[in-house]
Image: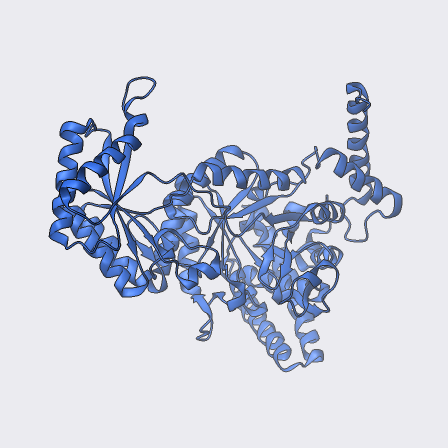
Amino acid sequence: MRRAVPGAVARADAACVNVLETYRGRVGRPAGPGAAGRARQSAQQALRQLGGDPHRGNAGLAEYDHERFGPFLGVSDEGSAAAAIRRAAWESPKARVLRSPAPLTLGVGMDLERLGAVGEVVVGPEEYENAWLECTGRLLTTTNVGARAHVRYLLPPPCTVLPAGPERVVIPAAGREILAHARPFIETPDGVPRALTLYVEFDLRSRRPEPEQESILRRLQDDLYQEGGLDRRAHRLGLNVRIGWGPRGRDKLMRALALAARVGIRSVSVDGVVRKEADRMGSLPSLLNYLAPGLIGPVLRHAHKLGLVIRPRDLVDPDTVARAIWSSLNTARAMGLSLGKYGLFPLTLEDAREVVTLVQRWFPTWSVAPVCYVDQAMMSAARVYAGHDRVAGIREWLKSAARAGARIVLIDTLDKSKGWRILRTQGDPKGLLSGGQIAALNAYAATLGIRTLWAGGITQAQAYEFGRLGVFGIYVTSAVSAARPVSGRYRRDPMLAAEKEPTEEGVARVKLLLEAGFLRSRKGCPGSSAVRMDGEVQALLQALEVGDRATAERAQAGLTRATEEAWRRHLETEARS
């Protein structure tokens, strides 16, 4: 095999960089078609050779000024609709007023997602390359590297099973096994005992009454600490309990907590039968794998009252989770994207905070955004947030993310197949948050120094509402898309009946509504203009609902004119301030 000459490799890489720079200069910023033929093919080959764009030409989304230029709009697509998204963005009222805006002023991005039956899924090299070729210098690009974190677990601590039989036999045998597990943590290289919790559990078939269990645990602790060599400052005995489903599982766990508290054990671990809901989702946060939120909530409160630590048998390794996320985000950054989003489900709030802390440290200048999925119950060491506690959970999540250094976040829904919507309007049973709640959460995030993106079934009408709320940005899919036959590799998805393809018309309409809502809510917007814009929006939405295309076109044209006038007034005011 011939060895590559270092100088030749360097020259080849330099040539690839020149190819990319030439292509970038050739396509420029216009909304029309980019370079085709050999130029495009050469640029694609250069991207593959270099593994990305060394120029890192696209600015980070954190630099976008939504107070001046209105909410950012992200459109989910794997890249096939890039030209349509680009044309719609460059024909928006803001683009017309600004004439030749830079991508970070235009405020529109293609969000790289493959749209399967399960919802948005990650992209690969072909999608990254196509996004760069279609968008570099003209549109922002973002992606979500995965809704679920790739959870890895630490090796569980040792657990000794206490079988049936007389105490005089069971206790010495258990003591010897426990000491064997503890030996490496006693005889350490530096001679300093290393902390370890050693768990015991009662064999399910032993059916020992609680007084016997209490007696065994007390005697076992006395023997281990007085004669066995365990150091009370470093080594602890814990109780592991196996539970079943539903109220019976909860009751057994409550009894175990009471038993542990009576004998001075401070740590209880739980192993159990995985709920069907958890099995369908792959896994849920911590103890929610075994008990529903309404059952585990009282258990956590009781454990806190007793001063006990309660945990699942398997603990997440946040360091490994964070590194897996970093590798995917780094690919997105290398391909010149403006933002990388990453899911933290099914981590607890504590584990998520550790992951976000590391990810933020590794990307000090590039924009990364952790995602909060509000259709799922959230869990901390002391509390479950679900249903009526949803808003409180989001606030805690935001607070945790801010402490970890996050400056942009996405609030979204995870289980797309259930049709959840982030914004609840007109009593929609699938809506999760009211407009007032979103406004309050948006304001709260701002006090923490966080800019918030929103997604999850946002409709055309809701785009106008989000504009009025003045949010940092939104992501849309269905609101801008039309159905088309399943093609290409999407055919492998057995539950996908049709593909969602963003259309130029759909993107243009949502962009218009978002801009209009933003300008309508500005303090400098005259009352007459606000009334006019509200009227045009209502006429447009009503016409679309009944399929009156002619009326819809007239209303959209009127709204476009009103929005352009509002942009000129707004930008003049901003320039004077």
